[in-house]
Image (cartoon, rainbow, N blue to C red):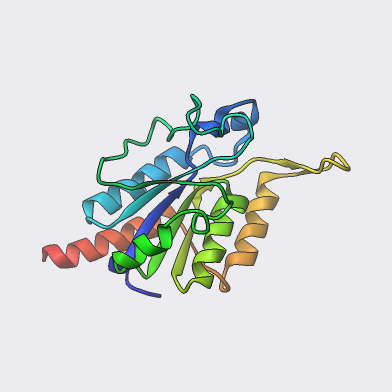
Length: 194
């Protein structure tokens, strides 16, 4: 795994669009905001790059310029922190994220955001295919139950998370916790401060 000092934090689709309708009440991770905030703070303290990404599509709440098309209120983005807009499930194909990361010398990405098995997982898979080492911070993602439109069967958030970790682990990413990643960043900072 590449050094944490060559990493960037990606906050994928942490936007109010997901609060349209009733699904937000059924989200998987009520510590999402706290965990993402801890990672943002750690990256800022270490002066490592972070990127915010918003998703747009025709679904209600995801229209560019709409009242919900914005970062969630717990995120206080700074002017020097990029905000990219994508219209694909992954954060690379419809943005210049790859060229921005390469320009900064980034070799490792840390993925957080919404939703676990869609835009976060897809971003992780593409990042691995592009040659980045990836850390998937499951407890800094969240998702929602998925209903099969044909059968009415519902897949629980627990099943979704388990499946996502199974398919990413060892092939596309390391599965990490917020605590583990924050401690890794702090460890590097402590060496620099010594």
